[in-house]
Length: 143
Image (cartoon, rainbow, N blue to C red; front, side, top):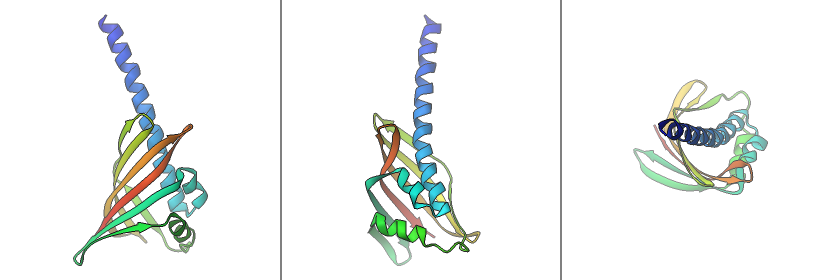
């Protein structure tokens, strides 16, 4: 009986880990496109009506803003190739309930190898057919 219980438990954990890996892969694909300035790749893991927001924190105070996805895509596509930037994801915390997932990713941002800012990305993800699509992202930014 103990062996059967352990086997069922092991199979359940494998399913959970596989799902979390699928969700994380969508976020990784987003950043792969981001770093390559490839809006087609970014859009492949984003819902058509994605919501994008940002919270900046500085000595001057806190600022909340909405970002139009089309403006974000245009900005990414027009970053000069000689400008080097990297958003280093420090960890992934993936939580799943059915076809919804939440991904919390602390990060550090570098421009031309120099630290710029840090924060956290918070992604809401929805499983559409066989792919996890980002439906909402909000990030914090602070020096």
